[in-house]
Each structure stands twice: as structure tokens, then as C-alpha cells.
Image 1 (cartoon, rainbow over the protein chains, first blue to last red):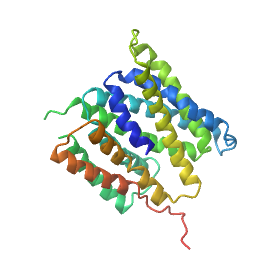
Image 2: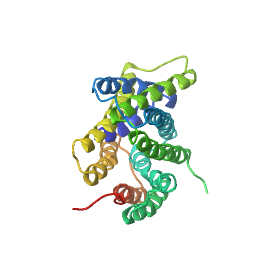
Image 3: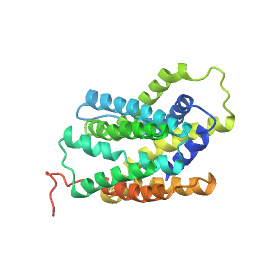
Image 4: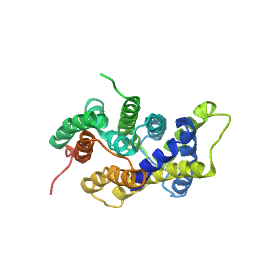
Length: 126
Length: 149
């Protein structure tokens, strides 16, 4: 639900502020959630902290860059009702990369999902 | 064939967010969800510092837009954190993950109701297919080490 509200909210804000400003303000909004996590008492341990932290940092950089592109999609006139369903298909990329990088096999459902997602993206762009 | 610029940016977002699905998994395989989230946040702040020079010097952001954008960051990251928490508190991944990916439904309802967005017939069909595809994509194959009782 929180993501659903964020999608519509972003469309409203993108009419007034550019993608980079939006990302800077977005990052400020992440800080209170970081504070909650900081006091969770579950920051120790892990089988490989250096590796885990490196991948977490990379996730943030890639996620933030994706955010900027998402904000730009709205600045360029994309509708919230179209851009959000289209970008929600990002697991399409995860499933494909999971197959090649993590050697995870795709389920029959996921293979059907990949095909449907391709058609959906084409239709959404019309 | 003319591809609108917004489609290009939406696809860039899709690819980058899709890659994070893998990097996030690699991270939480090695450390706790909380520590992973904390460093995810650190990277978000680092990226904000990097793009800061691109932000307009004459900053005409109204207090309303300022707080809405900040709230956007809070809502999004809280959504990511609570979805992990739902899984950790015993929620079945087969139910929690597909439910998470139905979030565009709420955006569509809000966009049509409050933003008065109109959709073409192909786009309506695309939305239905996208929702179905998102649910199907979340149905992972059982791990080879999983044991059934």
C-alpha cells in the first residue's frame, strides 16, 4: 500500500520539481526509517559482513539511480497509472539475472510471467 | 517506430530496480535485513550528495512539495522494510510477495480518481496483463534443497 501511494504522490510532485531534487528529498525521507532500523538491535552477525554491506550499498546506488529514471518518466509526461504498473515488472529483470548469475531456475509460472510482462510493457507504451 | 521518452526512462528504472532484486538477495544472504537496509540508506544519501550539484541553485520548492517528496522517501523505504518484516514474522512468501506486487492497483485507483488520468484501451489491457505478470513472476521455483513434509 505504501508503494502504491508513493507512485501517485510522485506524479504530483514531478510536475513541480526535477528528478534530481526529488531524489535528494527522497534520500532525506529514508533517514527516519534508517533510525528505526538502527535501534532494532539486529545489526550484528552475518556470515560475510564485507560482502553483504558491499551488495547493500550497490543496491542503494542502483535503486536510487532507478528512482531518478522513474522521476524522469513522470517529468516526460508518463501517467502514474501506466508508469507504475510498467516499472512494477522489474522482477522480470531479476528473474532473468537470477537465472544467469545466481543459477536459479525459473518456475513455470515465472516463465509465463516473463512472456506476459513483455506483452504488457508493449501495450502500456501505446 | 517512435518510442516516447517516458517509456525509455520507465524501462531504465525497471532494469535498475530489477538488478537490485539480485544484489539485495546477495546482501541479505550474507548479513541481516536490518544491516542491509541501513547500508542501502547510506548509499541513497551518498547518491543524493553526488547529484546535489545538478539540483537547481534557485530552489523554488514549495514547503508542500518539499514535504511530499520527503514523505515519498519515507513511504517507499518503510514499504520495503515492512515487506521484509512481513516475511520474517512468518508470512508465507507465496502470499506476501504477490500481495506486495499488487501495489500498482492502488496507484491506478488514486491516479484515476484524484489525478483524473485517462487510459487508452491497449493501456488498460496492458495494466491487467502487468498485474497478472507481476504475480506470476513472484512465484519462485522451490529450492532444490527445500524439503517437503
